[in-house]
Length: 221
Length: 226
Image 1: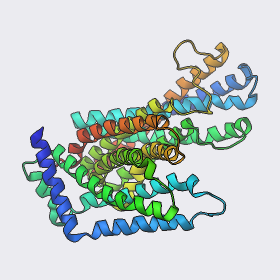
Image 2: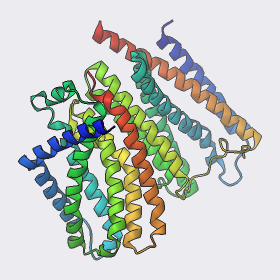
Image 3: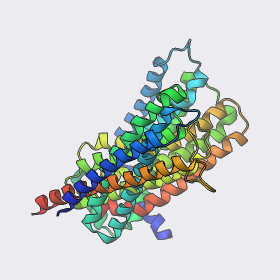
Image 4: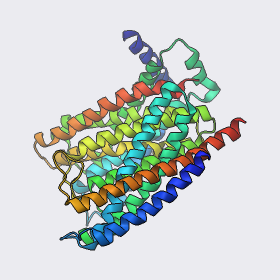
């Protein structure tokens, strides 16, 4: 089985599990007292947001390792991670407003977290635009690595500075110092969803990696 | 270290001499700045929005665009006659090349800002005399941040297709943070708030500068190696 085929199977498994998570979220997880059914979107929105950040960080790390090891496989992984990350960022940016309209009364606000996600999206798109504009594969790999590392530094810097801005967005309730605030049933659903999104991420990246590998081979023969 | 700075100074002097002799880029950048300020004046309804509310944004959007123009030019001029290859085979540390370009770009943008600020005061009738020193500090820190990242990226984009379009696409997400800090600080200064309210933004700007000058100095050699 090639990497692409394995990735395809993983995605199929992930999609089935995602269906399972949603059956659990809609039928077997309590409805949130204040937000009502709108809160259900949280089981897609939050895992997608975390996966986006993971994709960006892995893209930057792969770039940093590439600069030392000069292994083109790392560059292909970074390329795959960036593209999959863009899709997850798009999911975050569409599910967010759908939740925001009933709960906040507005589709969009320039809140620190929303801005950060939009920034991630721009960085990922810019990264791919740069890749598309360089023809030489060695040069492209180095440039992308440099941009990827800068992007991660910017995201980390932003995370640290975000605590200084007032924010409308719900504060982190799971990954924070101390115990999670979420009731156990909701927490379990959320964690299952995290797991499923991770499976989907890996599956998509494997398929996209295989495309990058074939392209590389087609150019170099 | 001293040798590195000496080399950097040589590069910066070369760029500035070239600029001083032709003066095309600086003159266009200055005219551009004046034009953007003029456009802003007609792009608002003076009866609806008071100048003071809009002033910080006008100032910083103008400076951001002007800096972008300057940065595009930094490595563009090394493309002619393959001057960049010449620089790279000379016994020159790559970090010095970055620092030299950074110094020259800083000088360029500072000249633009030195003309832009009085024009801004004149066109929008904003009094800055009493807050001149802190305002200059905000400008200095923000400009260093803009130029530190911009110099690194401009070295990459010159060898891509659509370089002029590529630089803003890559650079603007990175300028959002220093731009936010600078606008917040400027707004507080113009509103006559106490300096203690501005200190936090200045610290953030300084932190941004330190982080990105360090990262860019580390990464720059990878953008030019063969």
